[in-house]
Image (tube, rainbow, N blue to C red; front, side, top):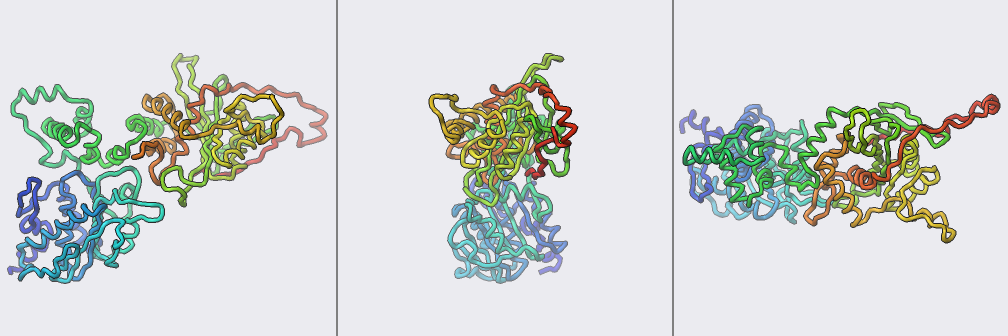
Length: 580
């Protein structure tokens, strides 16, 4: 063979355009492949890695039926042809995925006209789940979670397809175990992780949103493909279509500058393939590389409202960080401590406004699916100011989260922090959750501090009760019914943005609070919902918030003050507690 032609053919894109055979959507065979936008980006990065003699790790956020798996298998096949003696494997989320994608590799092999396929293919080395090429490179398939996963030992070439859908349990993560057998440090190393979006959690989502982790991210929006458009039969049809544009279509046109022909294709696909569900289309044929993750999670709160609230928090976060010291007459003093304070304060108490403290106590385990993990839930303490009409401007002010504490401290320390917040905001009502012994202990200590604590039952004096019997009526109890109540009451407040939260950490929990397949509203696996539940408890009971008034100045015994320098000194003490 001519050496120049041979050198040119060793380039993957040259081979793809002249030798690769693929099956098109209509079932016909295309003998010379013309790469689309996404596939060209893959080829360009692969070529760069080969020239620089470095490992090539590529993540592809897959649009539906746009050739992400096709290009991954093509590059892998060409790579294993040009690098003898490699071992590689494909892992799909289910057996059907593994079978379908594995057959792409086989088609390249069996129909490759390039001269390295001299002689007949050895049927004994072209098996259902394992293919050995003439140069000794071996490619096999497996399924995430199967008993034989990882049977091939160390591999230098890896393809995880639909990795976002790998089934993960508390004790087993197929992605982690698979990557443990993948040697990704050498110039011959080639890895693909391809998937459609499946929620804001898991290895694919986390790795996609991290930087400097070695994986090169490739994405192409639906409108970047040449076949994502439909022509109009006449100018009149085009004008009628333009007048019929819906809100989501107008948004696509405004943000991404798409054409009417592209929007006609989009509407056609939504109506025929997605039964009119534009959100489902946005997951599988995304316009950007972030929204699709959220939409695929069935978020419980309105995504547009949360996005607006996060943007507002970014420009209105005027928090101060410090500690509160309890003083003698059920009051507390603010001490700034930017480096180690345990409380974030957004607003000082305002005379005449009403405040309430809500507490979601740590149970020692995740509140999501999965049970006990190495990252249990947290105490979340929030101070909310009730909405009011501003006397100066006569405008309505929303309820606002004015102070926030989050930690995993012992319950006695937590009780002191809650008490100090209550005293600081005018001895306001505290609504602690009492699920579990930790919550009951906090309630007991708050009562001893003299904090007004929320009561579930009226206090009666019918008969003398023990302290434990008295405490049974205190605190907020979350069960299946009350949890549903408080979440349902919070949803419209978020949707209409009738509450002010300027802590982005809290809003992030709202963003990852979803509806599971069983219908339960909770945090995504690996995420937390402590802040959501604390806010829900507070806003459900905001009508019971108590008014902040200036404390009366008590009399001072001047003779005792002269004799005892500790008289009227602060009785509390300062603690530093990290906020996670």
